[in-house]
Image 1 (cartoon, one colour):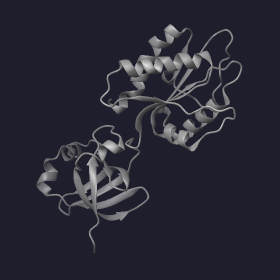
Image 2: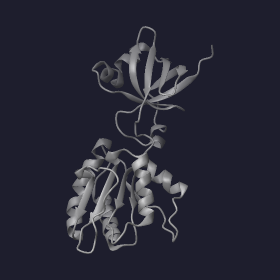
Image 3: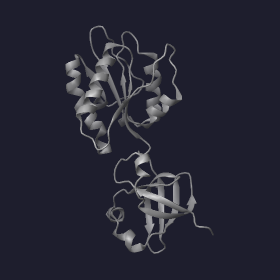
Image 4: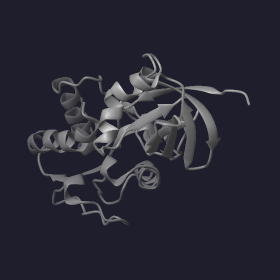
Length: 239
């Protein structure tokens, strides 16, 4: 039986896929079988080297250990049989496919300009081991969701939407908000709304935790509220 050698990279924290593949791999595997949600493989590295590795020590302590496996995606170790050199993996929702970007869904309203300015200030003034970028989809007279924008939204660390309604929500924002609800984890979504006498509170079709819905009055208040909110939402990525 032919040996199918796969490289595997240990993922102790969030790391973009293009950076993962640039560093040396941490494990060599021979794929035995591949299922939709699982993978069984034999590790080809020396047993002593494996047992001394950081990831194996974490596994022994009962911690979650994840790898990106070449051509297959991200997996969590379910079980290891050191005698037979077998490892059983379970498909993971690890976020290595994400890019260090914040996707902002806004409009041409003053509130969006204020939010955009505050987001750029946060990125410029917040130290990060991975440089963050702000991305937006181009706006056109006819609200269309371009494939490139869908990819950018799906791969962003956070989706941020201006849901200020005066008197209605921007159609393009509605499209992107719906796609975000369908494609991203709830803790990757931030809803921002300016509350004034002229603006109407927007009822959302889904419950959003209070820490993921930021309501502000003046632009100066937005700057004070946004930074701790974003810091909290980005904490799982250990930036």
